[in-house]
Every structure is written in C-alpha cells, then in structure tokens.
Length: 509
Image 1 (cartoon, one colour):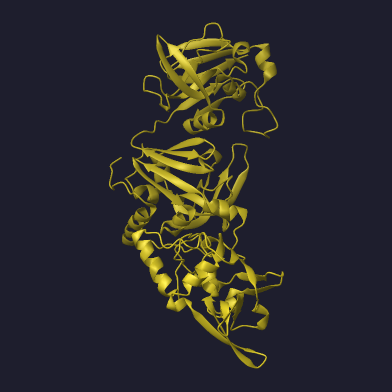
Image 2 (cartoon, one colour):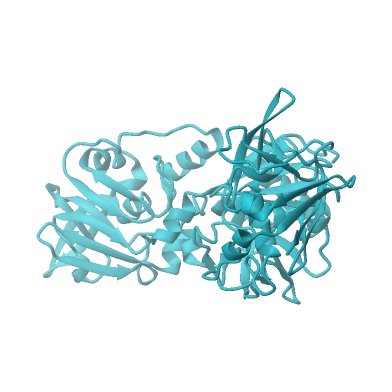
C-alpha cells in the first residue's frame, strides 16, 4: 500500500480532506433529516446570539475555553434539561445581563396596566441544553427551534406551562428578574399568551432529552488505524462527512436467515482512501466492542459493481443499537446486495488496515459431511471461541491464539447437523460419536499427517488450531494454521505432534 496522505491528527482535519477530495470528484453529501440526528450535532448554525455568539465562534477557532462561572454559581438556580442537563444560576444570570444583547426588556399589558420586565432571553438558557456543547459561550440552534420541540416551564409550586418552539419566535419570551425595576424571583414572561407567563421558575425542560439509544450512540467513537494513520470519530462527525450515504442492503446468516433494510453510513473505501491507496492484498481488520475480529482482503472492498461497502450506523432512519451497532459493515446498492452474515461485522469499534498483509486460505474438513472453511469462517470461530495457550517446543516458548480442535469435529461428526446451520438450541457437536470413538487425521500442506482418537480430544480446550502467534499472524513457516497445545495441559493424546501449515482435517468412523 502506498501512503498518499500524512497522518491526520483530528477528525476535523480528516473531514476537511474528505470534503476537498469529494468536491473534486463531484460527489454530493446527504444531509441528516431527523431531529434526533441534529440533537447530537454540536456545530449547528447559531443565529441571533449577539456578543456570545461571536465569542463562541472565536472559541471554536482557537480551541480556547470560555468563562466557566456557570458551573458552580451562587444564588437561586433553574434546572435545565435538554440534550444535556445544566443549571442556570443567579450569578451566571447577572453576568449574562452585562452583555448588551442579553439584557432584554419586555413591556406587557397586565389588566390594562403597562408593566416592564427585564432579564435575559429565554433562548439563551435553552442554548445551554439544546446541544452537547458544555462550555460557555453556548451555541443556540435556531434551526432546531424553528423545526419545533416542546419546552415546559415549571414553577416552584408545581404549576407548569408547555409550548412548541415552532409556534413561538425564539425572542418572544424572557426570563425576568426585575418587574418595573424591582427585583423578583425568576419569571418567564413576554410576547405570548399569558398562560406561558410563569412566576418563580425552578425548572425548564425540553423534549430534546435523548432516549437511551441516542444518548449511548452520542458517546460512541470509532477508531481508525489505516497504515499507521490514526483518528477517532463520533457518529455525528461521521454523519457530517460528504461520504455519508443511504441505501438498501441485506445479509444472510449461516443458518439461512436474511435481514434487509435501508442502512445509512459512510463509504468504507472512500474513508480508507482519505489516508492511503488500497490494494487487493491489503488486510482490513474490524475489531468489535466485544473483541470479535474479522478481516477482509482489500479486493473485497474494491469489488463494488453491485454497491458500496458501508460503515453503517443507521437502519431505517434510526441509530443502530449497541448490538448490532453502533457501527456494522454492510453493502448497499440499487439491487440490494446480500452478503454472508460473517462479513457483516457488528459492534465495530476499530478498523486496522495493513499493507499487503492479507493471506487467504481454505481448511478442508471431511467426514459424514464435508466443508471448506474459508479464512473468514476460521477467523470468526477464533473470535467466538478464542483460546490462548502457552506452547513450548525445543526450548522456544510462545503464545498461540485460536480455537479448540474438538470444535471442528462438529462439522463432520453427523450427517445432518453442523455449527451455525440450524437452530442454536441444537448442539452441532456429537458427544455420543466422540465417546464411541473415531479417527481424526490432520494433514499439513507438505503431506505430514498426525492421527488421533476422538476420545482423547473431546471437550479438551488445551489443544487448539491457532491463527495467531504472540498476538500477530502466524509466520510463513507455520501459516495459515497450526495445531499446538498448552504446556500445562492436564491431558494430551498419545502421539500428538505439532502440525504446521495445517491444510485439512478428516474424520473416519
């Protein structure tokens, strides 16, 4: 793989590189269309923010923190609830009013008498909780207000009033602490029906409060290590990239169940190409949140006549849940491409791309049924049934990782059942057949053979078929697979020997 870009230190720099690349290629981004999506966006356009809006823009450019006095204030307080929770303290309220645009007067008619109220705009308090930004100055999301969400104002005595923002201008209401120049407890008042005038306010709630799924998705980050270039993205950042797209895709599990839907995510190939060119023999390894790993060869991702490989985090418009999300691999296109279930990796946390690192292979299994297990199936088995042993041979000690040898017999010890080919409640491995005894013959690529009895390996997790050595792929002298055992194993079959370059396993009954 030839490096074409330097290491990008931040997601913002990467996004800029993608924007430039995609603009030259004539691609068009797809904007988010769901309020919940915008709710996790900290970069929404701010309007009518006065002095603080300018400060916020400056802070965003310099990376500097603004005044933090709002965090631990004094005096009365109003609880605020939205995308996040906060408190509006009296001390912060007083500081806000020192900015000319945030000291607002409303003159209203109270039973025929003109009454003056002075305080700060309600939208300024809402700005504290209408996005995930947690530092003053706040970014007020005018677009979100215009689209509409509920705001509920609650008084100390329990009285509450609710309105939808799309029915009221953002500047219509203020939080006042002066009535005709005299101090009062905080009151919401202004250009609205009087039922929204609430005295002695203690709480302001919005319907922007994220549900558990949205909140969890907002805290997730995807890590990239592409030929040494590293970065990390939130889902909101990924969704803003011009390589975000949506399309219909499907996958079918090994048991034959098909799942289909409209997936939204970023194009995997374009994301990788932001860092480096991708070759057919490069390896792309997906590491899941639970430790599961799956590797694709570069040629798999480069093969796209029927659609695009996505890192998907939306399904039918909603965030994917932690399981099977927050990110999963899928292929989408006009013809609804359908991929094997083990190629649709769920709960993806990290993606690692290495130059010319992918070696494909097939492990042949024979017995009452025959199977050819490809590299992906073997790697999936390692991820699901991972076992690491300390193996010693001729004074050399190394750690090998793979899966127990006896699990392979589940593919061939019965003419009907095999792993993942039927309901999970049906055990693929036959204890009865193993205890009755059959011959297991393991053959290396050079023809070397070792023969064992099923009685000696059944349920013995200390003998494994290994795919990794000391945390790395096997050296060429042992690859693609090797049979090893733990040096502290309690029981070893008579005649067992280390088999390098394992090519086939057969059972004779």
